[in-house]
Amino acid sequence: MPTMNINTKTALIHVETLIGSGHMRIVSHLSRALQNRGVDVYVLSSKGSQAKGGDFDFGLTKFIDLPNLFRDAASGKSFLTRNNIHYLDDLGFQQERFASIAEAMDRIKPDIFLTETWPLGKGLWDKELLPALDKANGTPWVSPYIATIARDVTCYPNHRQWLSDEGNADEAVRIINEYFDDVIVTGDHRFIELEDSFPQASQIKTPIYYAGYFTSETLDRAEMPQSEREVVVSSGSGYKQDCFKYYSAAIHARQLSGFSQNPWRILVSHDCPEDDLTKLQGIASQMEDPNSIIIERNRPDFRQLIANAAATISFGGRNTTTEALGVKQKYDVPVLIYPRASDKLDVAEQQLRTIKLADMGVLGMLTEEDLDDPAEFAARLDQTAKITRGTYLRVDMNGADAAAAIIVKGADYKLAMQRGMAYREALYPRALKR
Image (cartoon, rainbow, N blue to C red):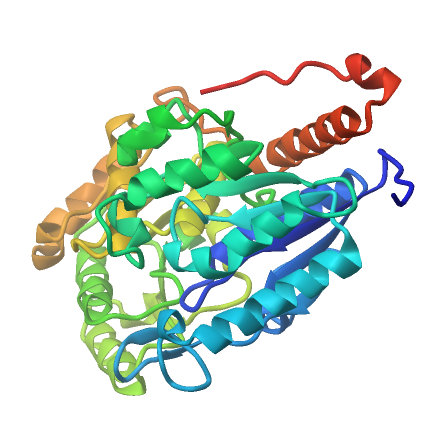
């Protein structure tokens, strides 16, 4: 058995995404937090090279590329292999991806093995991660500490849509109880508990920790007159037809709101067709003060824009919401969220999270009907501006660091227990927080 230093650890993290940046951003926050605690981090993903070249800060993370998966924007089909068939129908491709994971495990010999979202979502990864967990538990070296980084909202049972049988939620519980040392939720249990979206969470015997939301430290706010601060309107990295309606509604609401004297910046996804962008610019040009409405594509300095903002309006994506809340809690910037009205899984997640936070008086919420009436849209924004410091409960935004602490303590404990080290009793107890 190789000698190991309990103070020097290696983590291997599995993460995969085809649309948006949320999954990668969560892992970038966690990777840096683990590195701050002396952990050497490796990330398994088919999108690692893209993430490394994007606006993410992964610190010293090393990427291990998995065979790539694709999304056909024209047909809307996702998780396609290079053979242009779905991942679940391509057994050879599944085996190839598992072989890449197995090779990485043999070479790195991780002390920590983490999965992002799975098995409380992304059920198709059963095909490669279940054999990976079997391999981890049967390694000739010390078995790694195993944890999942779970969303605060799982939208079960549908979030395991790739498992067709009715027992998909039970299967997720079985996997967690059999293989995982901890479930670490990226959320604040005072606002949203796992049981709110996944009632079967009560059957999980594995410890569940609520680490708090993962977000970057809020940037410094530039000094400027309040009238020069912008209302920043955004929708994230994806683009659907309802985005056009949302942008158009914001443009028309400006002159009716209490922020009519502020400039408004409409940030449009890079996926937005050029024709739609031109139409939006045409709508803005017909307003009373067209020079105060800026319409452009998403910018890498988004976090600085919202730090300087008079107010933020956005879709309810997990990362955008937490970044906006960070600005609110530091600078009292109003946050208005439009959780898109759909029964699609990721959107249903946005709806539940936004409703919970709005009910707790943390932020304001737009409805689909508000997009049809500029006066209602403007009124929602003005009402949101009244949610000021002292009127709401502060959300825990220190999730990445808290999660890293849980992971390192858990790895210390498991390693000590497996190796029978005399000082294992000196390791402080690990508290369960449900």
